[in-house]
Length: 296
Image (cartoon, rainbow, N blue to C red; front, top):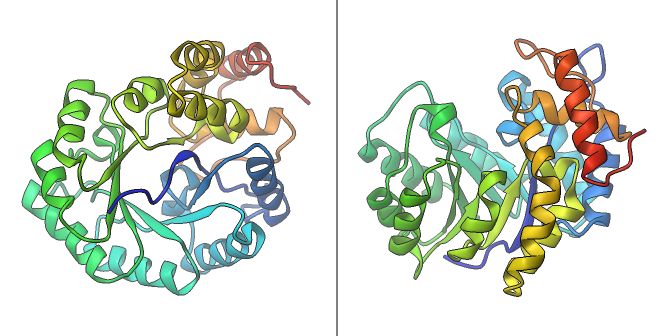
């Protein structure tokens, strides 16, 4: 299926108190910050949201809160991927029960399945729900790569809405797009490649940097949709140092630090992730300022 989301989407962080609990007050502020700046869709409990270190009760509470707070003002997508197909299916069913508009499922990780295993994994998820399903391909993090021929096979599943691409290989991404274009959308999952992916027909940007810079990411998406490449390049180049700073350490360590710097109380990442190193904090502050975003 095509046309599930378009424009800009944010891979939301989950803010925590110093004692480790979810900070729902801050999460509400973050949701408002995104919607006020034109973000079209919010991805909650994707890998950037640290679900791997959250309890099931916490995940349910976050989904319920997000559903109530967003209140239909943006598409709401819940992350349901797992290295266990059974757990991914159960999480997807729960997401539908809690009112998600769609789900995003990262490929199995650590359990490095074959391309056949990838197909069976997504078939099981899609058969468990009537919701649109987005596959997430991020082999640098998972060790599993959805190859173009596999993406093409997935595109024939009726409720397979698209693939979030973060493989980092534009040659592969172009071939995937060629194979899926008539039936399924492709989304940028790599902020550095936002412009080239939209240039070949990417439908939306699913961004980490937009936790800090939602207005700018939305402007890039809109400019590309209107074929205003020069404008898109100008905005992208201004925030490129910030994008790079968001990945100077393992995501979401830098972006949580950046959110703290602009007055969004993200707190600390959960262990085993640590706080951003001091030298990288200085870099992040410099990059936020150069992007034209106000520091607190």
